[in-house]
Length: 151
Image (cartoon, rainbow, N blue to C red):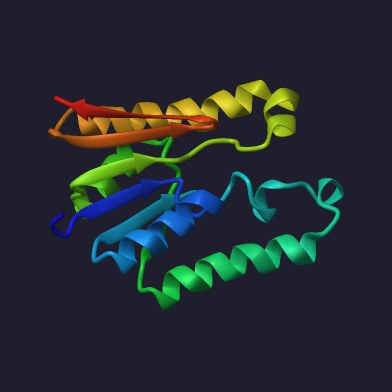
């Protein structure tokens, strides 16, 4: 496969950062857009996190790995259509992999509205951008993944 510019939406999580490293090692150019608001220390209230030091260390390790691999990440909210369209346009990806989701069932059950907002609104804005171009868009939401060609 030729070198591809691959955008990972929600790519700073466990799956996303590992996928970015994998893609980089195979000669591709991964870029990440993530708000850092979901599934990490910054999204939790103080009383909800029992081991803040561990969670912060994990997040910092992920971000340092991305930096060491020279993988750019952009702290942007992918729910905001106008702002994210500019970011996506400037990155000009060949492929988008949508990973943004609330990954914890307890969080999802406790607050389904936020789960919907973060999982599907980010997907909606990504699809709006994808309508302008013809390229592969891979969608991974919680426990399922699908591949579509947006035309």
